[in-house]
Image (cartoon, rainbow, N blue to C red; front, top):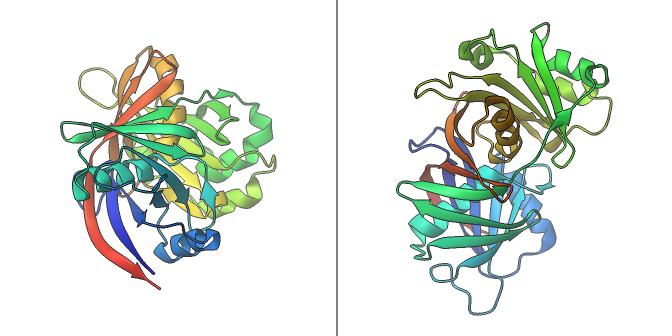
Length: 286
């Protein structure tokens, strides 16, 4: 069997930055167990599998495809950067000419469209509710030590814990913070957290970023995810409420880093836009 595979850096226009995802184009059905084996072999935070939904579908002409995402450890219900990477392969490599692509996923139908040099993703918007600090105090201490925490929220839909650091901290503090994400596994006692977001208010005046973040998911075998679309489906809701804004510019402060343009819609969803760079084209043969 041969499967075309691509490595795409998402939320950046520069190779070797942003968040890399592997994208596999499936001409035929793949044995269920092979998805995870391939994702483990690729060893990136996410491997996406695009599949045809009907006989006669074509990667260059069809507008609707199935899409699944796997970390090196397991399947996940939503991944923004691998969705952007998948759309980039179809738009830029396969030369798909449809104005909008629809992906059928575990999170429902997701749409992607091209706007100039960006790809805009239509993602669900998730609310994060106030979280009792005492329940997650050990986890937060494992993440940020004795740093001052301004707010703690929890998103039950995504199982993500959002920890907002004090506004007195600068971006550099978040960037330089040494985090041992592996320790989260023993520090998390509730059993309900599967991802931890650290976030910080940005310079929302002028042309600066409205907020910054980092994201950790050792529960899924991802110690730190460089740029995370699904985390911004939670962050967008939170910071829109805090800042009173529907359009925001965000930056994820990982070592590779990446920028996201955000627009909350009237239908309760969010458009998240980013650029991409295809850095590898190859074939899996087995």
